[in-house]
Length: 271
Image 1 (cartoon, rainbow, N blue to C red):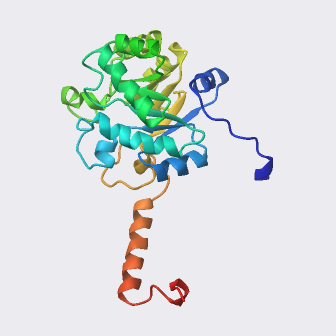
Image 2 (image 1 turned 135 degrees about the vertical axis):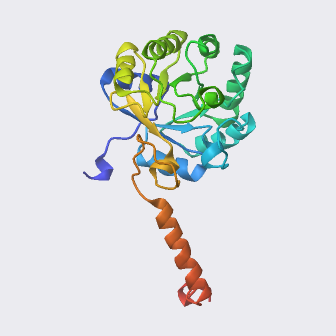
Image 3 (image 1 turned 90 degrees about the horizontal axis):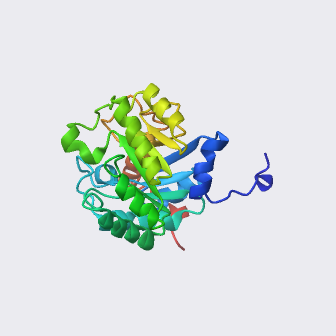
């Protein structure tokens, strides 16, 4: 198809995101942490970008997401939002920036929207965070919930790979988040049949990660799906390319050419 004749891409909004479920259109989401990657992913056509507190692990090299601060997520969120022209930008509320009280959550989320230019925030929890979700939506702050495996609860759950199988509790969490006003829910590490039941039970989009194909959309951590991370091979992950090998190969070639005097050549030298 001639690119000049392709329909103009409209910016993704919260209402359009929600409507996608009613229209039967699967939603796509990836993580982004800086301007360069956000720009590339946005231009590629991604529906939404999550500035995840996973930056604590894939950017900062930490073992968990817990150390990420509000100032840090705002720093990364501003870069991402500045790069994006079409995708919906959602920013994680870091650990202990919303759990203390609904007022704390509104203040933290308000800073994120004001200082980054993002559209929405995401928090972990369902029933426990229902009052907080309601307070955020009452303040006109769009909020996405996150149920199942909750990385910020790692100290309680014991490990990042803990699959959540309590179907009644998971469904209760999803319904509580929906009733409180969330516009979407991430379902993490949930058996496919349970995720399907949740997706059918709630009117808002479910975004799965390790939750099967019956969710209304999918999210992956970009460095993982791009093959940039090492030693992380969960069942749900598909690596779509191998940038780690490509980057290291190009770096080794550059090192070799510089050391052997092959770069720069006359073509790379000003006259």
